[in-house]
Image (cartoon, rainbow, N blue to C red; front, side, top):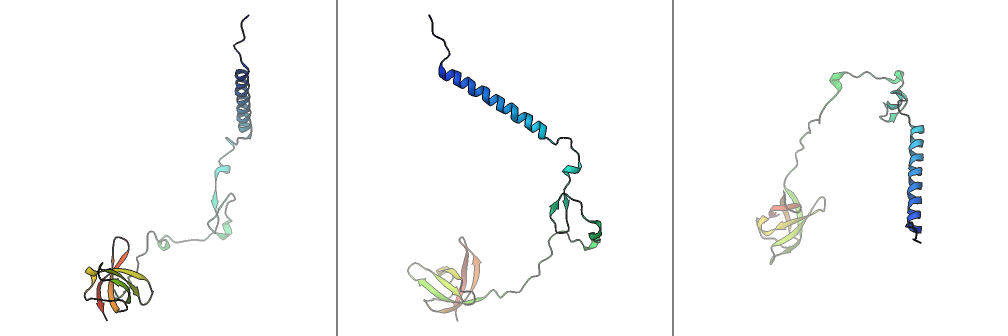
Length: 149
């Protein structure tokens, strides 16, 4: 007599597949039952209240404000140019003559700026008070046109 081709694992796999199909069908039916499809346009509308928040209730007409079209400014307002003295004052915090670079601490903000020997107008050493200008470098702002005070 021949053995059955159905093993225990095959039967278990079939049971799992059948169970998954049934669960999927139940979920599908539940979604259809809870669906608000075709419930209307009113449920899709969102309103903005006087504070700019989204709500599902329409705004109160008594709080409505009239705004003239001329008062609405579209775009970015022009920025007023502020005159800033490009020459800054500082003190040499570190300078390595052999490598040709150092750092300057700005007097007002105590911010450190890199300085290269090519940006020097006169030779400087640590502790010298200097004036300098800033220029954008590869890794940040660099001090250039450095002069002793």
